[in-house]
Structures are given as C-alpha cells and as structure tokens.
Image (cartoon, helix red, strand yellow):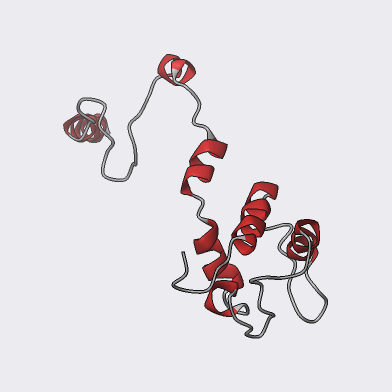
Length: 129
C-alpha cells in the first residue's frame, strides 16, 4: 500500500502545474485571494454596452417580422417613419401585442430597448445617408 501511495505521489508531482499555468482540464490563470481582492472588478455594464449593437439586435430579434431592418413590412409592420411615439414603441417592445408580437421586456434591458427605439427613429431608406 505504501508503494502505491509513493507511486501516486510521484505521478502527481510529475504532472504538477508550472509557473501558475492552468492544467489541461482547467481554464484561465489561477490567482491568490490577495490578487483577486486587489484586482478591479470588471464593469458588466461597460462591457455589454461596448459590445451592444442595436442594428445587430434588431436584425437577429426583430428582423424575422420587420423586413429590411424595419424599412419594409413583413409579418410585422414597416417601422420606418412610424407615427408611434417613443414611449409607445418602447411599451410595444416590452409588452408585445397579443397574437402578433412577443414581449421582449424580460429579455432586453431598458438601455437596449431605448437603443432599439433610437434605431427605429433613425431608419432611412436603404442607400440614403
């Protein structure tokens, strides 16, 4: 039994991590508690805001029904030049319309909804500046 324990110990030592590098089944760099405490916390809002593109969101989520980026009617109405107020557009995005449009209030943040409303407001015919 002692020989098996010695062999296991030797094997473990042979496969030990070098220079604080992660092993083959681990990801990322390991940090000590002191290093983690002194590191600045990443800003989720800043990183998600920087990565957020309302045109891409519209294309992926809304574009299934609002054709040509909202410039033409599809299953849903044309949004370019809509007579709805910003508040009405935001409300519709949040709550949907029974039988016609799903609600996105639980999937999108207030900032994302506001960005999509601004995107809709700024729609121009394709090719126009």
